[in-house]
Amino acid sequence: MSKNYITKNGFEAMRSEFHELLYVERPKVVEVVAWAASNGDRSENGDYLYGKKRLREIDRRVRYLKNRLEDAEVVDPKVIVSEKIVFSATVKIADEDGNEKTYQVVGEDEIDPNKGLISWKSPIGKALLGREVGDEVKIHLPKGETYLEILAVEFL
Image 1 (tube, rainbow, N blue to C red):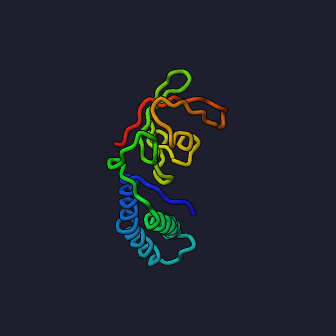
Image 2: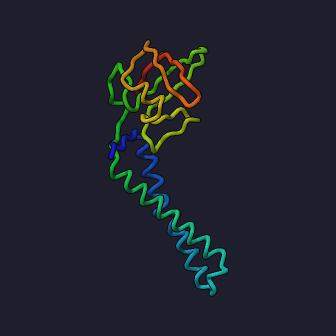
Image 3: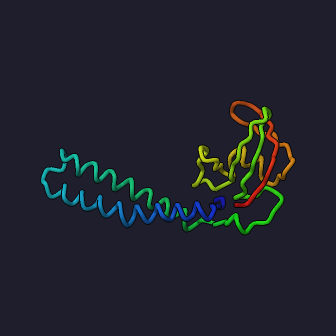
């Protein structure tokens, strides 16, 4: 099993979701299911059926989050001093057309390409790790190969 690296912010977000589901949302759903069950025939009781389904979804997510939190190896980017790109680095790159983008290399549970959060296991993440400012990296993407130049590396 590979390491579950996660940034400090990602860990806090995951822990917050865990607590919200377990201590806020789940008790509300349990209350609705209990009320719906007291209304008699459960086979055609939409509130009961939906509630049970939602409860299973919550329990599945809570189990997943619990396991991931227990296995997490938290990395605080603010304490890292490195010239090279390592996990949690914020990297500014330029593509072959000169278009600039900024990415942070994060864990699998916190990726959000729309916010510039990419997994350290993604094609771009793998290609960037170990590189430094001025390096040009070749990336293999589904649409083909492309080259990126590393413009800046920060640990925010």
